[in-house]
Length: 508
RNA sequence: GCCGUGUUGGUCAACCGGUUAAGACGCCUCCCUUUCACGGAGGAAUAACGGGUUCGAUUCCCGUACAUGGUACCA
Image (cartoon, rainbow, N blue to C red; front, side, top):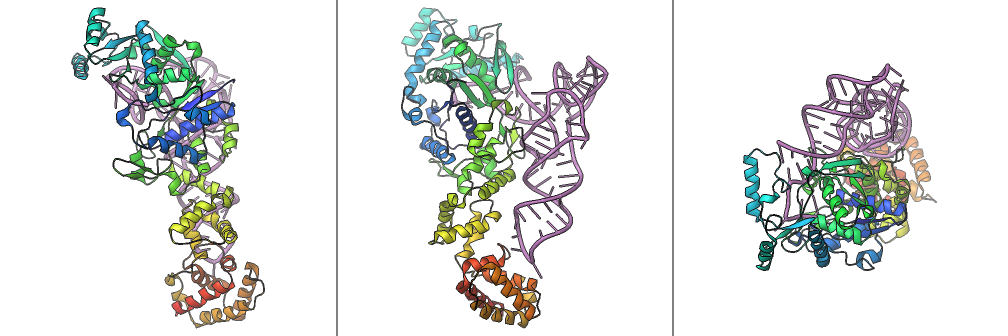
């Protein structure tokens, strides 16, 4: 439990999807729970896939979620730099060491040659198409070549990669915090490329070296990494010793809600829900992918929902603050099986959080939403009261526009069909009298308005219920919203009278 | 094809050999509300299949099926 250090290592290829955020979350929860450090490192070893602005975007998303690495751990401190492209030389040194120790070798095979090898093996009916012990002595590499030949090739500037030499007839065993003891036969793991022809490391070399150098104690990542775990274990064994190796946990995948497979960006577009944390604009195509934030999610709800996807506390509690999550979290309670994403449930979490949080905490954001639609809020107290009154019927922050706009703007259209069929002179006269009656009201509060309304209705011999819907249409314009008298009280006497008068004209 | 991982209602899932197999989302009914929601009370709905092991298997083991991931000089 001492000195826990975890890391999140995003690949800046654009966007930050649900699975990515959940990986950070679990890392973060674990680190916080054990009083450890949370490190963010950037995996940009494939420069061809690097997208401009993607790194900044990832940090913005994390900031929105309220997940912060220590400053020293992002940009400075003893372990910097954190961007893999800036650590190129370091990886090379370790690759060289591996070669010197005969645990890796130079390979000069061109992609075409490798392809030819695979075609040949396929034709032979071989089950395995790997570059491994069974084939490496037939390939163009330093294992088969004489040392002088290898040297000549390198001196001549022949492109080469460095591959790990997976030993034959052995196996790799390690313990995963979620899955228990895992066992892999070396015959099934191939000689993965460690250093690419451009001198950049592959993920395999980079994680191991970085995790060691940054003293990572616990490595959590997606389940898709399980098949390459043996390579990483071997690298640990050769480079730093198994005693130094972090504890592993391979997190279950987040799956598509409908069909089969891993949840992807396209599924969101297809099924109408976001997959990214925040809006992401691809700089190449200018295509915008919707984010949870912009759709109207609260970060607490977003994280809460994600935490419950693949993990559960074993109790009936479902709504957790981040601190409660930290307290309750344990890797052992993470599920093994992938979970299908359910957008309905995600919205439910948001609804819960809109009720739970102080309205003031999201007031500013709602204010911005209203401003975009031309409603400028000037009175913060009034605004707060309105939010309090309507929040129960909001699932997304964006719902506040529909639910709150009529507190700031008189309706300009009315659902006349809801009123007209039953409208008559008696009702018209009732409202004319009602205007006069409320003018005399001292305290224009819901209870008194209701009393006045009902008294008058009894007096005029009309059922109050039959008058409430018209009243609502007058104030709101449509059939929704809180109790009519609450609305009237909120918008005030003048405004109520004005709206009733105006609607009376329309209903004629 | 080969290798890995997994499989409790439509979805998320609890129960880690003996249970009437929790709970939540969604769905349905009713109540509340002469609005729309919230809320409350009910309801339908689940252990992939076949073998073992055991007094007893949803729980352990083995097969099969299915799903999913990997099989790249992508991460």
